[in-house]
Length: 258
Image 1 (cartoon, rainbow, N blue to C red):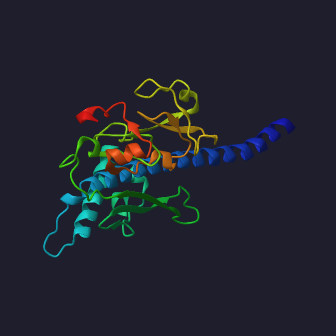
Image 2: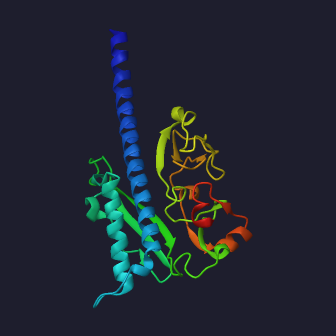
Image 3: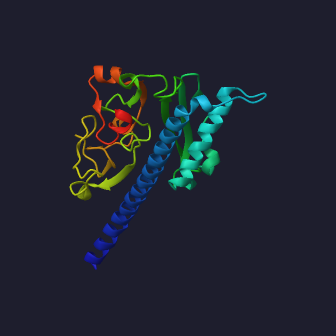
């Protein structure tokens, strides 16, 4: 009887602890999935709106900034749907995302998404956690690539952390496709070129249960917010890119004579 009573006491202590741990893990995975989906969607939206910034016109009673910001938000919303982002985790669903801190200027597009995630604890009332995510890109406001330029001065695309210049903005090396993999799957993962992934020089040394890789990258990341997973794309003259030490992209560098 004494042993049975002891088991009952232990079970009454261990079981609630285990259930709390399970709830916290589910909450963490839920927030991680939501954060990743919104981050990638915002980044895709600002990059594409920045490229076609010159196409944004004005309407009666509306400024270019108003139209541009509306276009960026609509693009982000479309990406949420396309990527099946679990917006039902947000208080207010898609309409619960606040973009009021976002900006669309002559040179930059910045999307700031603020939203609140309800916590699964109702004993103290309706608790939630505010999250804020940013995405930024410089607008393309120059001349059309290749028009009136010599071969050596055609427009190419570079990134601050990259080593190659690209002849086309649609090159797959510039379009990040981020995937989350577990620690056990990391060693067997390969990029589209068949290469293995090495630790990111910014965040790769940290330990994590989830790692982030891209289709054409060669590094794995432990943080979805790592700058190595962001793309700030700049259009420059080919001669300028070469002078800065960039070499032709192995995938698109020979297109158009580059």
